[in-house]
Image (cartoon, rainbow, N blue to C red; front, side):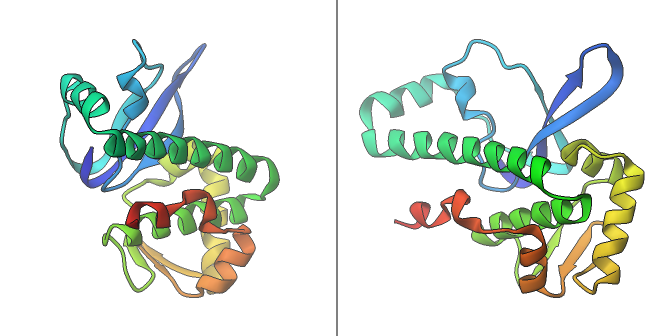
Length: 191
């Protein structure tokens, strides 16, 4: 479980040494690869984006929880279902949005997820990803990401300095991204 910082799921690209694709970003409060509990092997690596504090939970503890605490088991299941919903949304965004809107969607998602665990507020958050890593997340070249960041800045939607991101116009950024946080189903965790 990520306690502080961010981590990503990283996949090597077959036949292309050194190239990778990032298929998920994990923020504070996320179980990383909870589905690994029932799988014998994972097809990806987990890589920290900057400093990360993580807690490791033994599979024997998860087994005991799943056998003796049905409500917690349902919450674990909900976590994996939301993880799958994020994967689907990333695919939809990749297929339907231009690079600037796709980046805007990622920023909206990360902000909402961080804000839900108290790690972001006032539309400000830390994103310790390099443009190369953003390119690996979104499926563009670093040059396209550079242009997308510049476009969002030029539109007055974000202020982005190093790892510090400030969303200046949430409504317009969300509109550009066609972002709705419903797929994150965050209100379920507050029940």
